[in-house]
Length: 322
Image (cartoon, rainbow, N blue to C red; front, side):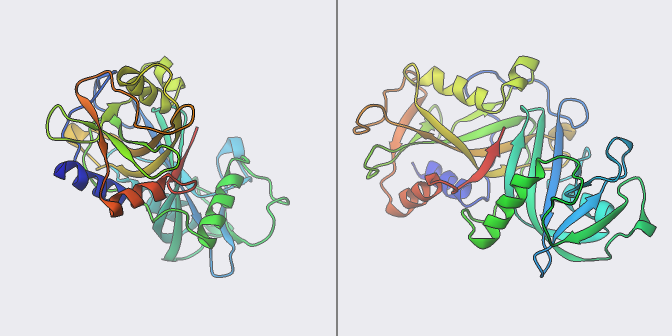
């Protein structure tokens, strides 16, 4: 299982791993993902200064003019995730920045993803009312409670709390996008089974060729989009496990995207950790598989097993918020 161990190490380390172009289960991918037509990716940044003030922007758009929000905006075709983050922060606040880690992945189905980053300022000049334009009216470092401010939307409040917790005690390693090509929106699945007590660990592998982690494509039909990223995971596991598998929460280990990928595609591969929970007393081996292309691999190497178990603990991955 040498190839699988290398892939696991790369995924757990956030380095990513080449997809190879093979997908498991249904649906099989259709046309390549293209921003502005079949998908929308949004970047959002949380930045603090040395006095723990958070960087806010005052909106200029007619429908929310005068309200306050975190720097955010849509990625453009042919743009990397990090380049989009830097551009949006620069346009809306006047500051340059460097991303530190992904804080959360927010989704409204595969067609709309928002990448939430913790970042740090590295230069530039803070935007004032004299610099107001179509991007924003101004930017400010805000150090007090947000109650006095009219916010564009309250959805930034849990993100600010998430950022504050990460700064106090990072629950997961720094996680940043890796520039690896992907034509579609897909999920690489690290499906882990741990009985209770968790002395053993099994990982689901595809063994139809060199052993690898399963990869499932996200459908783009409206009914599939509405049900979010969990739908293809449930569909895949339902096809190779006994009925009603006990599937735990999903957490993000990393993401892969390269601007202008194959044929100009803007696909994203999300490397996702999924826990499979035992039934009953919670002891014994993992459930039997219904598909010959897959098998359970018992992780014997102590270091690798410990890393997976650590990421399975609460907060050990980047949260996926639906």
